[in-house]
Length: 247
Image 1 (cartoon, rainbow, N blue to C red):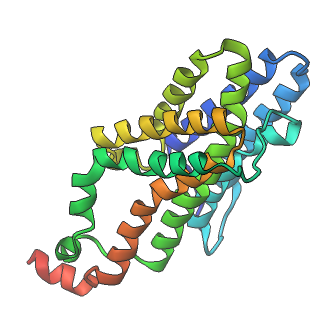
Image 2 (cartoon, rainbow, N blue to C red):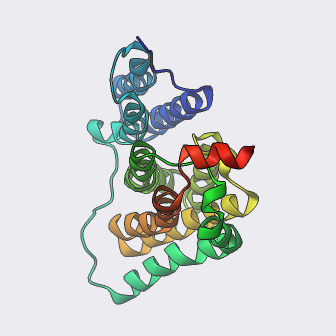
């Protein structure tokens, strides 16, 4: 019987997110301490529950689900959330496309190499389960992160420290990715792209009054990572070919 265990970086990431939820809940006027305590308790459960789960056939799918779900916890206690309506503004959607595309400019070399089909046989094969997990991290993660960072943390900090909330939210967003599950795969250009994406998303939320454009921009930004794994799944060499290539 196997036990699903979260790595230390994932546990640390979830723990810091919990502390952020607690700290900002305590700072906002009218938020009782019991609310902050309950938020922190739920974050702890997100970290601890997987270690108690045994014998689950699809246990690998549990970690990204809990990781994404943890971002939504503060919302259950009436924390701030900007509206997610559809803005009827052309400039908003033009800015959304720019927010998704411009940060990728710092990663074009990495993307060109990673998406080159000629290199696919040199990469480890990807299974359907790997592809599903990566897609959920990329697209589900975009939803969860935007709800937490732009729907909760940014507007809360904006009411507390004003324009400095742009810098603080982006720094936290950057640090959480450094502590995150895929941190070993990020280059310096990737971290610059992540910082730019966060900055653009903050601006989109502030001037559109809606969470939806930032969510769309984040999802579009993450799509190349999913395409990378789709190509590896489609064109990657089978294990037998990999073994022969190493001889």
